[in-house]
Image 1 (cartoon, one colour):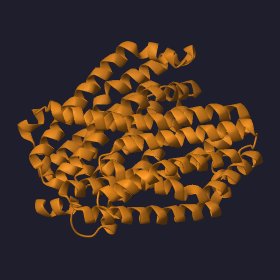
Image 2 (cartoon, helix red, strand yellow):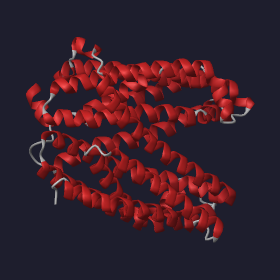
Image 3 (tube, one colour):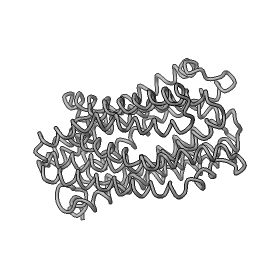
Image 4 (tube, one colour):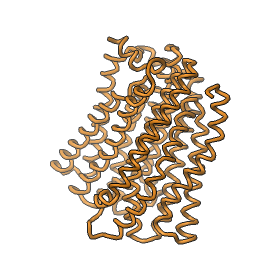
Amino acid sequence: MEKKMEQKRNMTEGKIALPLVAFTLPLVLGNLFQLTYNAVDSVIVGQYVGEEALAAVGTSAPLMNIALLFISGLCMGASILMSAQYGSGDHELLSRQISTTFLAGSGFSLLFSLLTLLLAKPLLRLIRVPEEVMGEAGVYLRIIFLGILFTFIYNFLANTLRALGDSRTPLYFLVISAVLNIFGDLLLVAVFGLGVFGSAVSTVVSEAVCCLLCAIYIGKKVPLLRLGKGWLVFDRKLLGRTISYGTTSALQQVCLQVGKTVIQAMVNTQGVSVMAAFTAVNRVDDFAYTPQQNIGHAMTTFIAQNKGAGHRERIRRGFQAGMAIEMIYSAIICLAILIGAPAIMKLFTETEDARVVSLGVSYLRRIAWMYFLPGLTNGIQGFFRGMGDLKVTLYSTFMNMLGRVAAVWALLLGFSLGFASLAWANFAGWVVMLLFEAPLLRRGLREGGFQ
C-alpha cells in the first residue's frame, strides 16, 4: 500500500499531462475555497457585530499578510528544494531539509508572536488605524499571532506533501479548517456574542485542529515523514539555501502587493463608482488568475522532481504540457467572461447601479482576450522556479508591476482614458514581463539541453 502511494506521488516516471492536471485541480479548488471562505468569515463579523468590528478585522490584514508572505515564502522555497531531493531519491538529504525547515520556521513563528504581543498597538498606529477601532484591532491581531505557529505548521506540512507530489491531501485539511472556522465564528460570534475576540479564537482553534489532523495523517500514511528523532536535526548549510529561496519568493509576493496598492491609490482619486467597479473586477481577476498560478505551481513541482532525477526529456515535455494546459484554461476563462460579463458584474452591485455595471463589463470584455498573457507568464515562472532560478520570477514580477503602474499613471491620470485604461495597464504589464522573460527562457532551454 505504501509503495503504491509512493509511486502515485512520484512525477519522474509515467504519463505527464494527466498527472499535471490531477495535481493542479486540488491546488485550484483549495485557493478558490480559500477566497470564498475569507469572504464568508468577513460577512459573519460584519453582520453580527457591526462595521467597527469588520474594520478592526480588515485593518489588521496588512500586518498579517507580511507575516504570511514570509512564512509561505519560506515553505515554498523549501518545497522546491524538497521536490528536487525527492526526485533524486536522496531521502537522507530530504529528511534533513524537512527537519531544518520545520525547526527554523517554528522558531521564526514563535519570535514573531512575541514581537507582535509587545508591539501590536505601535504597529497598528504605523499603518494609521483609527483610534475608534484600535482596541478591537489590537485584540484580534494579538490572538491571531499567538496562533501563527499553527499557520506555519499547516503551510509547512502542505508544501512538504506537495513537494512529494500530493496536492490532494492539503486540500482536504484546508476544507476541514475552513468549515471549522465558519462554524466556530457562528458559535462564538453569533451565539455567544464574543465579537472580534471570538472570531480570532475560532481562527486559531481551527488551524490548530487542522495541524493535529495533518500530523496524524502523515504519521499513518506518509512513511517518508516518519522522522522520529530526525525531526530535531538542524543543518545550517541547508538553512542558508532555504532562506535564500524563501526570501526571494516572499519578496516577489511583497512586490506584487505593493504594486496593487499603488494602483488602488490612483484609482481612489477617480470617484466612488470607479472604486466600486475596480473592486468588483479585481475579485473577478483573482478567480481568473488563481488557476493559472496553480498550473504554474504544478509545473514547478514536476520540473523540480525531474531535475533532481536528471530527466531532461521529461522536463521539456512537462514544460510543453504545462503551457498547453495554461492556454486551454485561458481560452475557457476568456470565453466564459466574454459571455457572462454582465451577469458577473450584477453579482457585485445592485441592478440600478448602472454605471458600476457598465464600467465593469467594459473592463471584463477587454481583459478577457488578454488572459492568455498571464497564462504564458505563469507557465514560464513555473519553469524557472522548478529549475531553482527564483531570481527570474522576482525580477519579472517587478517588471510586470513597474509596467502596470507606469501605464495606469500615463493612461488614467495623464491621458484621462478612463476605466478602460486599467485593462490596458494590465496588458502593458504582462507584455513587459514577457519581453523580459522570453530571452531568458530561450537561453535557459538552450543551455539546459531542452531544445
